[in-house]
View 1 (cartoon, rainbow, N blue to C red):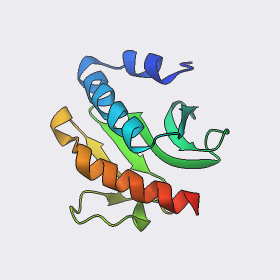
View 2: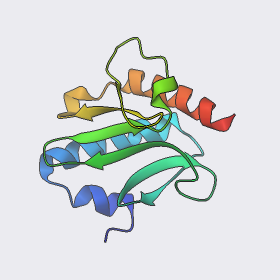
View 3: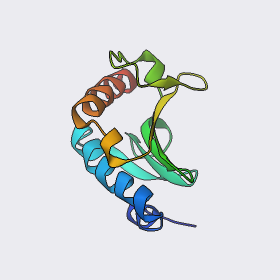
Length: 119
């Protein structure tokens, strides 16, 4: 089992690896001071020292895309309409290529999601 985010991304097929490697710095830049770790087999970023206790977002690879998900994404203002609601409060977007990564939009979502989790 993969134990760190770099190994997780390196182990992906080339197209998915590129997506993950482009998304990761966007997430890291938007969440300064947030922790990141492997949790339930995929990368998770959150607040606090315990992965998954106060999660903000995740990246999870599937055969043809990478999911970028926000735990409280349904509470995030999304004028783009790209976030798809999921279970509970989650919302996500499927990244099928690096062109699907909108750094400014994702940074805004992450800023909002962090503020929700911090309260």
